[in-house]
Image (cartoon, rainbow, N blue to C red; front, side, top):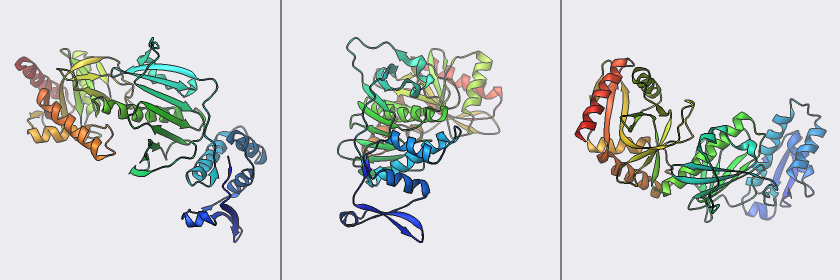
Length: 386
C-alpha cells in the first residue's frame, strides 16, 4: 500500500492534516486530522510498504515496550483502515495466507467450511465440528484473513449502529464492526455461500469472540435463505419436545429454565439462541454454538413444542394470545437479518407460518417454583390435545 497522490500533508497551526486536492476535491473527499503517530505513518506510505513493515517501523520508532506493542498495533491498524475506507491510501488486495487451517462445522443441517489461522477459531465450535465431506463441498465457505481489508466499494448503507454497519453494493454485502477490538470486516456473497472475513488484530480472547460473532451473523444470513430463523430464547427438552422461553432482557429466561432443571432435571439446550426449522412436516429446533454468556449450547435437532413469552407478575398465570399477537411477538424476537424489506418479509412470513403449528402463549410469572408448575400443566394439556 502507499499514499494516494491526490492527498497531501499540510500543517495548520502546527497540526498535521491530510487534505485532498485536484480530483480528490472534485470527488468531495474529506480531510483527516493527524497526530504524531499518524503523520509518521503517512511518511512511511510515501513508498510501497506492507502493513507488517509499517507496524515494525512504528514499534522501533516509538520504542514500544512489550506491554505497549498490542495497543500500538491496534491503533495503527485502525488508522490504516480509516485511510483505506477513505481511499486516502492505494491498496493491493490482502493475499490468502500460505498456510491455513480448516474446520468443518455442521450447524442446523448446513455444512460450514472455515479456513484461516487456527488461533482465530473459537473453542465454542468444538461440539459442532465434523469430518470433512467426501466431496469437500460446503453450504457456506468462510475464509479468515489476518490482515486489513482491501479497498472496495462500500455501497448503500442498510444499517448503522455503534456495533455494526451493513452496506450493500452490486457484488456483495459489507459488514463492518466499528466497536471491535481491532479492524474487523466481513464480505458476504449475495446468496451467503461465500464469506471473506478480514480480522486485523492480535488473536486475544476478546477479539476471537468478536470474530465468533461475525461468523454468527454470516451464518444466520445463509440460514435465512434456507428457511432457518434464529429466535432469541433459552430452551430445554421436555417430553421429547423443545420449549423456548423468550422475553426482553431481565424477563427471567435463565431463571425459569433453571427452575425446570432443578425440579425435573430436564436437559438445557441453549441459554440464548435457537434455530427454528419450518421446512419439514413438524417444526424443529437445531442447537447452535452461539449461546450468549450462558455457556449452554448443545448440538442436535428436536421437534418444537412451543414458544413461551415471559412477563414478570405478582402471580402465575398462562395468558392466551390472539393470532396477531403470536405472529408479531415471534417476529419481534427473531434475530435473523432484516437489513432489507425482502429479509423483513421473510421473517414475518416465517413467524406467520410457525405460530399455528405450536403452543404460543405468555407466562405471567414470579421467580418461584410455582411458576414452572403452572407452565408445566399448560404444556402437558397442549401435548395431550395434540
